[in-house]
Image (cartoon, rainbow, N blue to C red; front, side, top):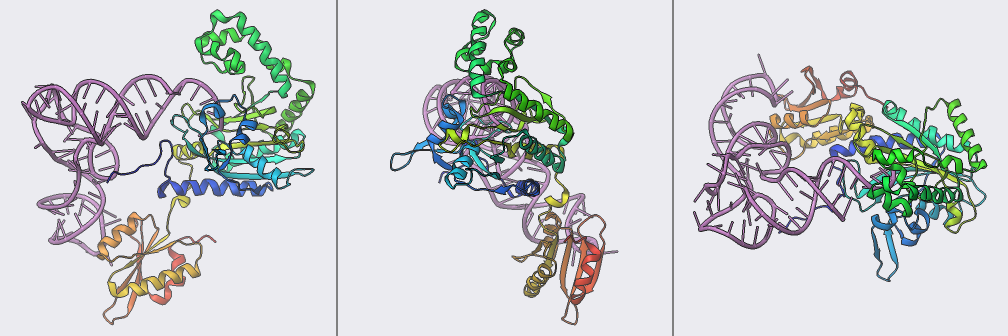
Amino acid sequence: MEKLQAIRGMNDILPEQSLTWQYLESIFQKVVAGYGYQEIRFPVLEQTQLFKRSIGEVTDIVEKEMYTFDDRNGDSLSLRPEGTAVCVRAADQHGLLYNQQQRLWYHGPMFRHERPQKGRYRQFHQFGVEAFGMAGPDIDAEIIELSKELWRQLGLTDYLTLEINNIGSAADRKTYAAALSAFLETRKESLDEDAIRRMHTNPMRVLDSKNPTVQQVLAGAPQLSAYVGEESHEHYQKLTSLLDVLGIAYKENGRLVRGLDYYNNCVFEWTTDILGAQSAVCGGGRYDGLVEQLGGKPTVAAGFAIGEERIVLMLDELNKVPAQALRPIDIYVVVSTQNLSAQGLELATEIRKSHPSLGVLCHCGGGKPASQMKRAFASGAQLAIILEETDSASTQLKLRMLDDSNRSEIIDVDQIGSKLEEFIVISR
RNA sequence: GUGACUGUAGCUCAGCUGGUAGAGCCCUGGACUGUGACUCCGGUGGUCGCGGGUUCGAACCCCGUCAGUCACCCCA
């Protein structure tokens, strides 16, 4: 029988790794709750039209990266390549947006058909935040500060840089793209193949070129900032002064252009240099026109999304997950003879009841005490409780620390309640 | 979608210019050990990613295919 395997670019997260994911998600949830954001959950499958109308018909995501197929009745469906569009659809469909303010968060798998590489997979996970109905730069500052707080609690602050830019309104960008395109046309002979190809399809993408010659040409190119309207300028200025007041350092990057069409005014990105080529771990900005574009009443909005895989890679690389979070269990119960298996199960249950924060694993499946001890050490538990029979056919317990100390003590069964705390720290 | 490198036991890897596979770890039985760890002896486990081709003969050469890794593109 041929073995089946996972689809390319779709990873299994095994028990060892899942502890890191749980830790990460618990910090995320704690932080957003602290800022008053509420969770929203929505489907992984939506009408293809939703993404075409939001992300943009001519973007890479829609043109070549979506998992799109026909439903049994012929409707075109797509696996969600990102969360913002779906969040808007869901919130608007249920009347959460009109004349209201909402602070929402979500997380879950997204799908893009790209060649996998470090930090980028076909099924990947995003954690995102979306705020609706607040026009001012204050909410922009809030979500940026929220993201910074995530990094602080995860211990990643020193490894991340905030980049921001003002990309103006959709109309501003259209005018600018035309001007840029015209400029590039005059320097065509100095451009590489790539730049020439994008010159007309998506001229702003040429700004990202890593070719030094092209970059030289760009030095004399028109600047987006010159095409940004007065209103956007004012918004951006207020935002930067808010960031200053909040003590959030940022780098202005005039070439930061998001790949999704719906953004406007301020956009931002958190980047790191420890992940190789995939340096962006969080990206977001304002998208004031999106709700209306999707058929809702005009509603201003801002949000960001974080790539969870990339954060997990950082946490692993930098060893930032506390040992406590990586410990699958606290206590391993060893049953020295099969006669004691019922007592072992009872004891484990009792400890779970009296100390709900502890993970207690009771050895099952038989085996010599020696091999049970071996598993106890391998389990990552702090303490082994060994049930053994005495000469008088009663049972005694041996507590043994599962570290190099070899510390151990023999006690009566009814002493366990008080003795436990002498051996391990029990958090509430 | 493009490119480079890789694909041998559960894991990490050897395998010289082609002659039908090996080690360590893990697991397991035993010796020793004041119930894991060190040492010693034994054991389980692979149609060498898959499919073709060249050859008397291929893990090793050729072609294709699938998968992994990294990079490009783009993005989180």
